[in-house]
Image 1: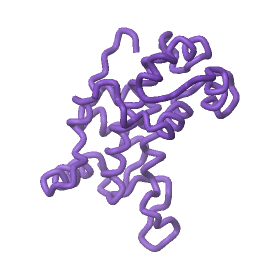
Image 2 (image 1 turned 120 degrees about the horizontal axis):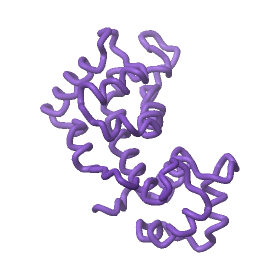
Image 3 (image 1 turned 90 degrees about the vertical axis):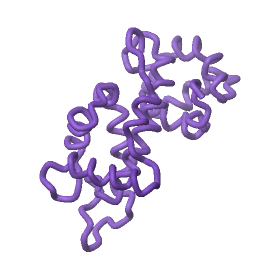
Image 4 (image 1 turned 180 degrees about the vertical axis):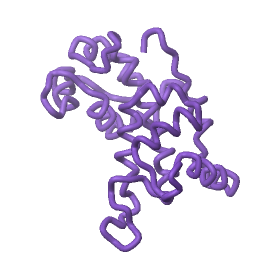
Length: 183
């Protein structure tokens, strides 16, 4: 993002995603702080507020598409929809909280890639921006040879622009998250 520097490593360091007992303890304490009602599940608004107020991760708080995508990916992952004790697919339950944190880190990395292509900072990638960025995208591990066809493939809704959700879906399918440019 022009004028704004993201620090993926610093953000990810605040997300206790390891499987160690210490990290699990931190997650449980963090979940309690994110859950002001103590009802055992988190709404999107509670996650949003927790990122800002509890973790103080302004970078993530300012990037709503990352929060939305991570929340959508994590909620309902426990596969208990409509079973006794389930809150349904509209909330992130305690058992899904680690997954939410993992997705936040992953999608934040993808946001950084997206922002490198979105040179006019409008949170959309047009064909001109995409065309100029192909050498950079290929350096991340993609193999784009037909720029127009690839653009159309990524632009799933046919709107003539690539939104973050579309970019993230494509980038994950190409394993670009495994070849982050800072690695």
